[in-house]
Image (cartoon, rainbow, N blue to C red; front, side):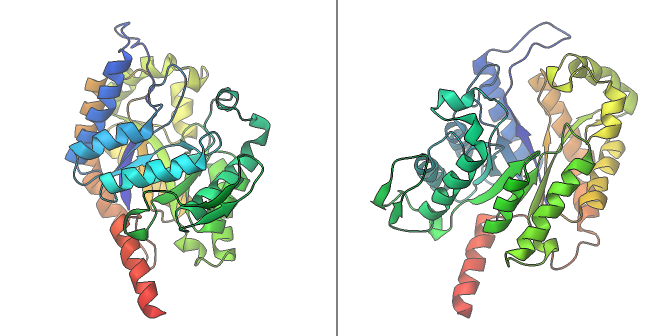
Amino acid sequence: MQFGIFSIGDVGRDPNTGRAPSEHERIKAMVALAEKAEEIGLDVFATGEHHNPPFVPSSPTTLLGHIAARTQRIILSTATTLITTNDPVKIAEDYAMLQHLADGRVDLMMGRGNTAPVYPWFGKDIRQGIPLAVENYALLHRLWREESVDWEGRFRTPLQSFTATPRPLDGVPPFVWHGSIRSPEIAEQAAYYGDGFFANHIFWPKEHFVRLVNLYRERYAHHGHGAPEQAVVGLGGQFFLRKNSQDAVREFRPYFDNAPLYGGARLEDFMEQTPLSVGSPQEVIDKTLGFRETFGDYQRQLFIVDAHSIPLKTALEQLDLFGEEVLPVLRKEFAAGRPADAPAGPTHAERVARRDRERAAQ
């Protein structure tokens, strides 16, 4: 089981002080969060991809490449790679390069994003979002696995005997998650390729995401990749920690009340209906362990800790407390009773070893 954090890189005004960080400060803050994540023993740091204010991470490979040079162990991932508006050839080359620089510590999470205007900005039609995601990933999948690719599709110019460079490290491409909050077509896509499915169930009730995860598991087995329980599932979450729940709720409430994404909801209702956990370490532990009861054994849990104008100092305090009092318990409890055939969280070394075992068995 892998635990980590992700950041969407939003720039907002702290409701307590009225101050908003500069873009420079926010970018540096994301680097500091990644370094802290490795320091406290987390497994993954992930960044979103956005091309509009108030977000700063428009170039995930640049950010993650810098973080790779400053870390040793942590897996570096995207929380969204825009498979619809990025050229799959450029994705193939950029992330293979990052994979080499990070010695294999690279994942991608494919998604369509949540900003409709991004489509025309990059010359695409939002009405073709699902077909773009399907076709572009089909090409990317081949570019990483075939030395010479001939290609003709609907959305880009044809390719003839094209080789993407550099080739993936050790001949094994980065692991891919397909992220979705609403689209069964994306769950099917993940299942078809035997990739991971990430349900970022932050803003909606769990029942909605259970249907998507169960569909993915069923289709994963249908396509011959293993039993439904062997499908690779990731979940999103959000916490705000203090030693006691009263302090956590009191401190988090201004951030919640001033965040447009919450739509004017009542904090207590939102906590009850979604994975948002605001409280003591034990309350965060209990809520996170409940995810397994709902979704079954899964492979990766990512939390967001710095959204909605929460300042860096506060986010770092959250991570220190999480590392001291929450993470060790979650590791122990998730390991207890985990079926022997449940897959581990994906790593480059494990995937290379599995490829070599399969070759030796042929």
